[in-house]
Image: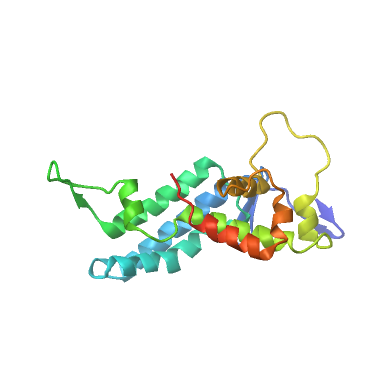
Length: 214
């Protein structure tokens, strides 16, 4: 592709502002890259700190302040399917199991890994999916409040020309916002209109932060 005197090579994917963009507009590669970076960060911190001598609460703070921001870089723009959400939750549960360690089984007396439900009870902080939902909705509120004169708003509400490809349509970013609103009993309403009331939208963001993830 040529623009003025510059030529741009056509590629399947490239990194822009730290985010991987693909020609298929898929978030899968970006999620894989974020999880790899999170794993590298986790092992680096684990090697630097004597985590067995630290309290569990302190280890959780390390995860929340050092590792989680690496994994969730740019998550405000993610359009996630249940499969990607599951991968993110598996990563977080793996870290939490390392922090809380094994548990003695009352029946067999053997040591075993903690179940997901047990991790949910032990960790009172918002889970990774909650954080993504709240950040995404906070970003949506900012975009909706910019007004029709801003380019980012026109891109959000605009309709692309041409026809959709045959088959099931992909989950869009806006679809995630609508699903999040359904979980707080605001489904079927125009979310852009709701976002104009900043106090109400801020309250919805807070509610989404503490949704129970099954």
